[in-house]
Length: 336
Image (cartoon, rainbow, N blue to C red):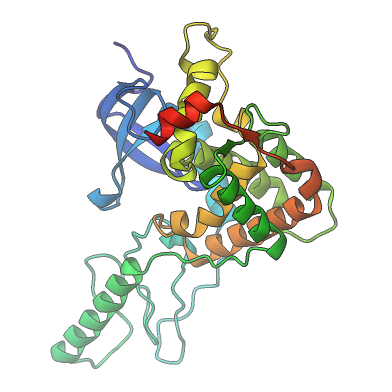
């Protein structure tokens, strides 16, 4: 079976909001019975260039791009948007302090370490600009720098979110309706996750609020959130009582025999604000599994906070007032 990308092919792959060079190690086609992530179709096991093997992962075809000049330009543009302004190079003397860049550590693979009175140390090279050092002192500095770099790599990105009280009440009511009252969110929802996020995008674009790099960040943010939603819904966002409904939704809109090829729907076009909110409050734990640098996390947090405020402002329109009672046969099946 031919695939869009071949084994050993060099590609570009989305990881969070940015794009990295990777290599395809394996390919597979997942259906409802074999999927490992809740998504079906072509999947590729990739290794990110310069990353440890622990970051190797299966990704759907939608996250891959061909390695060509156009997509390399896109990669460069995205990197530039998430990177703070570059500082001028400082002289390599003991009178200057070199500041290590953090945005280039997005993939947690930086080989650099900042040290007062030094030039940036290249991987495998020595430290220059410290005249008069003995080999013992030099080894000590190298060990300290290696230790600092190792600690930086071990530290996971952290994003703290203060969920508005209004949304906390929504979450509690949502939990109670599904887990205690045997109720479900009727599908398809209106507005859907995709519609809400597109409306949020338009709201931000026309708003006077000073959000960073709207023109570039917003499209990336929206596509990233939709991707996260698609990947995490079946694995992390459902209560056990909802899994039967989820399986039926996938058959109805994606895999069923009556679904017309090319007219399949994503789960972002089926589910609504209730499940979007569940994903948002779970984002900190999701972000902790990525290699986002602090600057990128700060930008992401600023937009997520604004998105939560947007949900609060539109609470009556976005969220269900009443859930539907699940049929008795469904309750019996799911509770058995």
